Image (cartoon, rainbow, N blue to C red):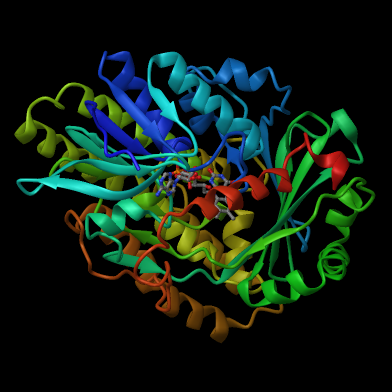
Length: 488
Ligand SMILES: Cc1cc2nc3c(=O)[nH]c(=O)nc-3n(C[C@H](O)[C@H](O)[C@H](O)COP(=O)(O)OP(=O)(O)OC[C@H]3O[C@@H](n4cnc5c(N)ncnc54)[C@H](O)[C@@H]3O)c2cc1C
């Protein structure tokens, strides 16, 4: 095995959303950036892939948007919600940077173009290259050891960025593996791709169907005419879904006639992919000459559709902050800490909202009435929660909740006791989320009412990198996306 040592300004582990977004500004500023990933792209990963305009603009910032649009994805300009008691919401997305549509491009197709954009900017992206350990000098991260099938070598750098996802080996190496706050997710995801019965005339909308405690997303995908259907259901149902995917699919359609009407006639169904491993968390994400970007540092319930947006945005901001400080260790460490604090301030509302939304079970009369306050006008309110135009607490305001409460209590068949019990139970969560955003300090560990015990982000240490992991990634490639639909 070779024991060569190479020099770089920055080494980044992970070449998807966070890693490529961080690499672009660093490389554009003229720094020597090496990005390593154990995968060979195109490669799929366990993820659906909604991006609303606020996230799509990040693709534009990194120079990937035109390449992605060349894949002919559907552009979704609306968010709609249909509840089984007849509630209908339709809102047009608030535009960002002139972009008024969302995208939903399978990860194998999208991420290979992110890698291409990082290379276009000047980053040296190395595939099939795994990080095995972080190298330290004088208490500072000083590089990584990496391994390919043929060689093992060291890359020395002034900054090590872990953009290596939820099972971040970098997080373990910098002793940040165990989150300082986390929440168990009560929901699981089961998703598949279908040929949309409405073809290229499918509504230009990300659609949410709610019925009997299930939430199903219908997401026009890529190429136009291919659609992603995501069943966000009780996590306890995931083993049953895995055991009999077709029966669970039919059960999902039977629960909701409106959903059945929308996609019941879909054809060319891909296999159903399911997971119940979705605990939300924050890890300590910066230290001497290291940072954890994207899921390596923070993850939240994917129902929020914001994981990629945050990985792209805070990857970019990390790259921009490091681009001007990387040669000064003291300045760099301060910039990394400020970056982490800014990420937390920006993401905390959505984290708590995701925790609330990831409780399984049917909508209560109170929740339905609060949701009903969004219907009847076209203003982007509910969609702004996904689009991050405002913090969630500025959208689901006390006034809106009070209006929902009054309407729920006034309903002719209202069970007023149970509604009031729910108010008492929910208050700590509402107050805790607001307190956390406005008052609690950096890396606060004071738990808020939205958080649930029993979270699990793995067994304390991620699995060691080994060549077999490459083979796993390769096998993942045909799981999703339009390109492989015919085979499924
Ligand atoms: C079921 C599910 C559904 C989701 N749906 C959505 C959605 O609709 N919209 C949305 O915005 N977000 C969604 N997310 C979240 C989204 O997937 C993540 O937030 C996003 O992928 C984070 O990007 P990342 O770059 O941080 O990490 P990742 O995408 O996880 O990439 C990490 C990379 O690091 C590499 N790597 C790992 N270890 C090593 C190592 N030791 N050496 C070298 N390379 C390594 C991996 O090969 C991988 O390529 C979903 C997540 C899940 C689980």
